[in-house]
Length: 114
Image (cartoon, rainbow, N blue to C red; front, side, top):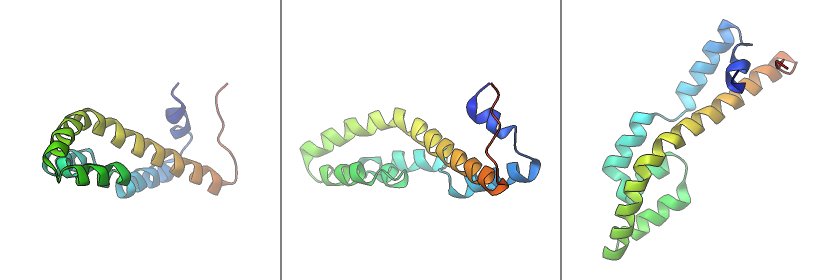
């Protein structure tokens, strides 16, 4: 059984609703990420959204010059394949932090199948 799934099965309905609400409120949206990638990707818009500020600033600065624009356009194409994983990873990490907080609020650690 998947580790995250096994942890989720230990949550009651109220806790699952809390988890879902937190991920919706603080998680990243796949559609927004790809819209930013499509329209502002050459300037690092999707990277700013995903919290990858350093590389976003690098893309923004590179897009000022012609040579930099060529590099950034290749980078933009590569990012098309990476954005999906970034959003999934970010939301999975957020979900795990929320589950950890729920278990801590219960005053006990989760029970894991052996």
